[in-house]
Image 1 (tube, rainbow, N blue to C red):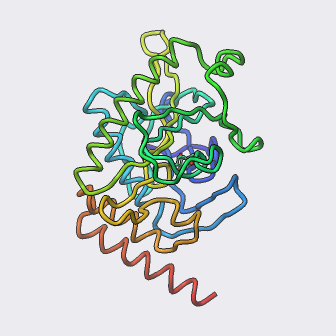
Image 2 (cartoon, rainbow, N blue to C red):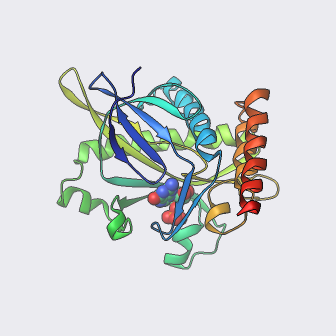
Image 3 (cartoon, rainbow, N blue to C red):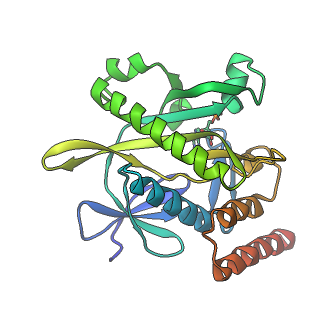
Length: 261
Ligand code: 5GP
């Protein structure tokens, strides 16, 4: 598939047109940002790992009937995905209280929630992705009730599946962010899961030690982000020897580069 012009560049990904108007190429960058872009860095190898991990999770979700934008992975950094009209809401799913929830409500960090909690944030970097109520979604017509009901059902199924998948490899799924979009299917709008699912968008803690295996390593300056993401990929069984070696080399390369600065 031929890569056309750049359509959009986000914080961690770039979208390119293809000769098919319904398909685009999603390129995973190595850039990491946090706190509404106030903290920025480039972490060599992150994009490669997120591409592989997200491909694995979205393919598995497809197999259990969760329609999503992934068509296929093209190479180490790129995927062909369906072009969707993105719903401007970040759907946050929480199983354990941590992060902004604990800060906002004074809940003790690590509190296990009885039921998964779904929160809505408006996808707007200029406003810092503010938390909104479901009523705001209808008031400003970001999505309709039927769409949100459908999305909520999909979210609970995705959460159940992912909790089980990660539990099987000794990882607790603490919370994560999902995005959804609309595509035309037989002339009708259909809601599908969009964006990536990776350690950039999930909080993943080792089941035994509670070691953080996600982007909090960057947000909280814990270091060793690439080894943590590599660990997730290895446990998911998606790193073959070849890519395993290259991920290790990437780590070495980036530490050499940092030292020489
Ligand atoms: P919190 O609201 O506690 O900061 O984040 C909750 C969960 O959603 C975390 O797993 C976090 O990674 C994810 N999340 C929330 N907003 C964003 C975002 O703008 N970008 C990314 N990559 N993840 C987000």
